[in-house]
Image (cartoon, rainbow over all chains, first blue to last red; front, side, top):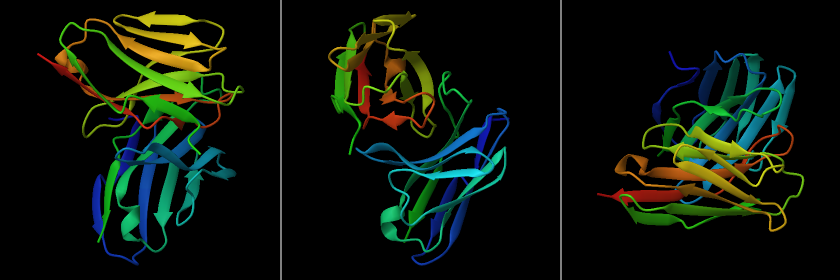
Length: 113
Length: 111
């Protein structure tokens, strides 16, 4: 089983719909992140959480919200999806120091039509 | 703004050649510089990383060169193989905070 699991892997949704992307991890890491990947733009940070009671905005948080339900679970919500949120979304985890890097899930490909 | 600038955007190298990808940063508080490799349909995977107290780190065919005064670091892939064809991302972080990524380099190694 993967250390960082994202569900769903693919999703097509309509403009204006609410959608949730889920992430769970078995790494035992405290820190979890949501990134968005677009061609030519690299990986941009949406939100991150250093523990269950800690939530922080990244560089592109507008239009997104998150929930840290447990140490191992971190979900990303799009309250009212719009077409320019069509992208590849990645969840990642790291330990407290970040010194061994971040571990990424397989990604969720989201299409908003 | 982009905190880590990566070049080139794409790179074609013949099998057996050396692939070189460069990154530059501005924030002198960054203290961790990893490189990630991503294959199509997969998440990025940590390839190699360096801290600013060393100027070079080598793992197999992959080497990071780090120039603290110039605020630049680069990835060298020696004896490049078709299986190395992937997208490579440099990144930087400050004391375990979230990674800031470059925009990526698409590497194609031709047979």
